[in-house]
Amino acid sequence: MDLKFINITSGINIVIGSNSRHLFPMHTHKTFCIGLVLQGQRQIKFKEEKVEVNPGEGYLVNASEPHQCKDNGLTKSISICFNPTQISKDINIPEDKRFFFKKKHICDNKLFSLIDKNCWAKSASIEKSLKLFIKKTINSYAELVPALFKKQPLYIKSSEEYMNNNFRDMIFLEELSEKTKISYCFLNRQFKKFIGLPPHKYQKQLRIKLACNLIKEKKLTLSDIAQEVGFYDQSHFYRIFKQLVGITPKKFQKSNTSI
Image (tube, rainbow, N blue to C red; front, side):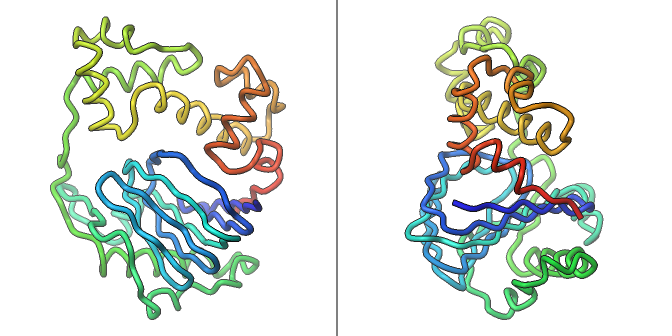
């Protein structure tokens, strides 16, 4: 599997994947994602829906929405991930509203024609064309919902904050239960409901995302990064990283460019 990551200065990231047969386990991310399949097929499983995306078709994933991706055949795809806060300012979304993609699978040749599949080498044109593409996708397929839609209970917020602040330590459900004074069975169910993943999978994902950020900074060795994010067995770090990202940390290190 080959992956190329392009980081745009305005909070937009592009992931170009090719020769993929990878199964990405259930995961979430803080960014929204617009994906386009160029070759092969990508199956995406959401909480209540499963879609099959064929060449020339696209898919939409909301921020913090749990989903699983499986590539069939040698799939080639483009994923455009963007920060909702910055984009909301750019397209004048009211402060008391946020946008939400209800539709997951889209077939829109006119929209996809705005993306020049060969423009990635022309850095001056990327940001402008991507912002136009994102704006038109939101205008065509997003709904506005109240900003406080699906507000988290305090015990979920405090559990998430505790895990974010103590990501190097192995945190057990019983520990979160003790701190929040909520039964661990109920806490586990509610954490998955509001965050999208159970606590142990959330912590694994959190560590790998932090590792990705450290790799991009290019200040530490991979072994130092593994320890920095709480992996004291480097082979375990490599295995979990490849499972969630699709490639090894070393490949990820070589496949990142910024514009």
